[in-house]
Length: 399
Image (cartoon, one colour):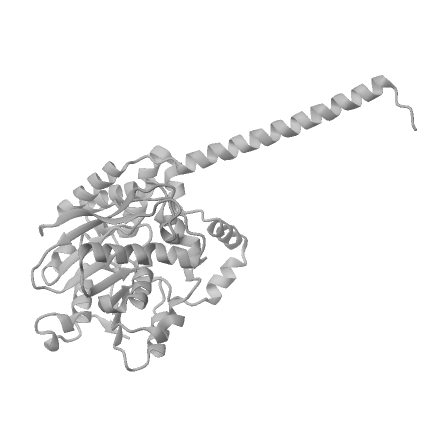
């Protein structure tokens, strides 16, 4: 056995303890920093009251009378076997619903897209309410609807989160069959709903729908670059745009306003929003985006980077049972080639048409509202008076 003097041993033990203490201190500091960042990114500089207020102010632009209600779709108490309703509480969930009633008119239900809410249709309500009974909803976890903890663990559960909450809402509203319109993510949800509950959907209208895009060389090439690798890493970690808005605190509204001005402002490619419209929509976007994270967390469960569906809707086309119309803006970043492929797989037994609206991008119903209305009325002509006399509207392109 080797002899070690007591003084040397004491010094060695002291250094070891100091090193261990330093490591522990460093780890504690690291955890504190991460906790601070997490707290910053989850801070909600808004409230449900602010969301409702901004919604009400935005809808002052609408002339047609409407009714707002919170539709109770039930609860998911602890231990519930309904996985999409998994919860740590037994609080009921509510779907914020706006209705423009029109007796004896066909019912159309509007389902918004990702990072949006029903108020995005403010430019369309008056025109649509002239021909339909219009019902627009905030999907569960969005807008002024309930924002329960997002407990989904996989793609199937994430899809059910939206599809089954929509079905519970339909039952609560006692709706029979209706025209179902979905935009972007709402188009994906509407498609999944129509696949599972075709008896309730008389016609499906998909506006720039997500889920039909196919993998492209452009996306694959970008993913191989260092910015692509970074963004893909953030995507897979479920880092959402809303986290940035919350993290910016008092600078969040300015960021959102800048986005609204650039996206919906003056452009030769679209009918720009007025300054008043932009301000009201910007406030609405901020409050709905900065609120508690809930529905937004579906993103990487349903889509991979590039908004490519993990379970592509094109593959489900042979199971389609509902007449379908696709509507795209001519400048929509969603590629209508996926819709063409879906139509090919549908066969000739089921009506399916693809319409393109000029001078419009992904938010076609905001970018060129009058021509969007023309396209929608044409798509739904079989349910409107004199529908057999409808002709393809001027400037609308049929693919």
